[in-house]
Length: 274
Length: 306
Image (tube, rainbow over all chains, first blue to last red; front, side):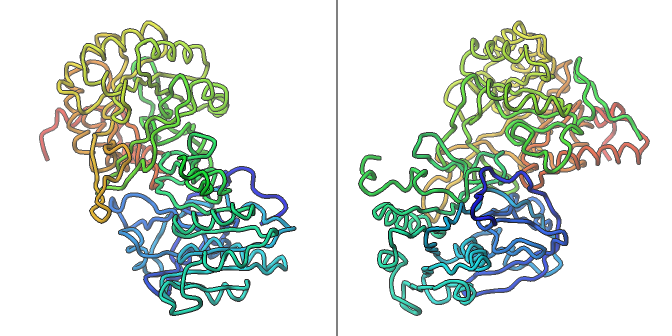
């Protein structure tokens, strides 16, 4: 990543690869990390994603799944939570199993701005693109603030890894680790006029985070999750209503987007007018 | 190496594999994967006179061996296609079939006129069978009289080869097919998606904002094959097959049923290289059996069952 030159267009350097699964590790509650073997490397920016499907799936599930990258390079990794048929199959995959990987796709995080203090806000499996970002920041000598929330202590995959590269505040809904509550309970105290927020997690969490940043006039990017069949602007299955009218496509303009461009996250003051 | 070129009316395709409208964008999105000019041709996303934003989300959902879509013909509009996309396709030597959509016969004619002037368009495919828009689309394709009228009007507006894409939902598809042939269509494409639905039991709501969507993918292949077989027996113009084709073996079924060419659609989502793989597989089959494409077309119509 080159922070001073954010990607201005979605990558057209994506490839379709057939690669073996190198490793699968279970983490916490129904989370799995899959590592793939890509000898010539998958050069990805933090926030970019890949479309993933095992070649053994046959006709069902039919479509590949969009997955944020945890790392790129010669052993790219994804983090998944089992939520349906596709992720269930991935969570049972064995090393050596052949996968198709299309990527890197979409636009990653813009910036981060060199003069602002990065503040990463992650919810559960939303940690993936943010840990990738935190590691990139660490490699350029910056240590971001982070808030990481989950339902329980078992819904915080990679929290130790995050703590290596960021100053982390943990929240859990049941209080089994960190502060009992939600990420937004901590956010207000950590936001300063110099903050720049990057968030990924459940939609309602991101909406609340975006709202808090609007109130403080602080920049905020969200990493969107949307159903998509292709990942590169063809199926048109991932429209997101835009503030400017019409739609943005999560796979093309996103998945990382300025929260102010998305009609789902208008400031509270405008929300009633929708 | 056997000859893979096929003739569809006056148009010669490099090989019998095309891509289906709506599953291959404007072609260029697939250029990072393979040389798209190696295909028999590409059918563009349905083009309308003005750009269309499309339907609200959710627009797609996965179903057993298939998917539902209700995109609502989102597209950049014919002008942007001609100025921004077509020159790049022309440069590459891609065979381009422009799929067009309108809600009135006048607009269909205007679209055809506009495309007729553009070098690099090799045929026009009339979309009179989209199930996901309120006006136009399937309203034309269900009605033999209207189908014939649109076809005749567009026929008079362009010298380009004219293909008409059939809806599987016409009550009397034979009458629609004959009306299009009589009105001057050069080929029929079959089939467009079949309307379906899905409901999320957990959230107790329909999965698509449009409620219904068009079903595509391997789930519809046997239905498509039956319809293509019937159409080949009904009309004298070539039939181009589409419906759940993902492999060369799938495509061969349709050629053996009498289709002159095939379109690969939904398969391009799970494997973006699928259209090329299908074309290579058909070639390998021909070489292995010592047959030409022409030897294959319609062969199952005269063979005894195995």
